[in-house]
Length: 213
Image (tube, rainbow, N blue to C red):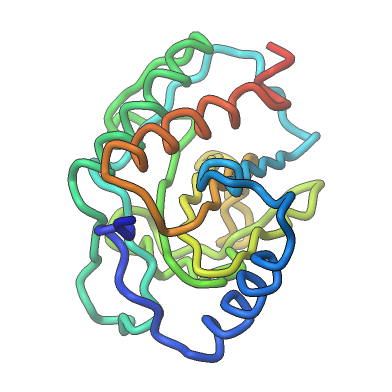
């Protein structure tokens, strides 16, 4: 099996060890899932204070940001491999367009800004918003009306999508009104990984609030 080529290897044995133990424990039980896909998790959450029915304008970055805790505040941003980035952004574009939304350039005052990132460690996604300072003003993050939670795993890769409301900024805090997280084992061919990303993003849009539209 091939690991996710767009992620860096784990940087901490402390992070990797619990996952290794969990995998060893699972191997003791014959009724555990047989296929990598069966370990995939799709998590979404959203603010009940916002209406997701209108046909909004939105913008997407050109690449998917790689979250790397070795990166310093002054370091340039890093991005995942182009083929995986394109798969993620193309799917997001397709799903948002299917909602009747219209993509515009970030300079044309979009009503919603969609931020996509990825990382490969057990990592709660209350991460430093400074990762996005190259693209988005360095505001703090706010989650109005809901607790975004987080998805953890063993040796996994995670794709995180956050929808923000640039017009709702208060006290230098931008509202993150929807989050979608895909989490899965770091195994599979490139084609398998892209297929899993595609299916799991579709699943995220089959869950509320979009499933109700």
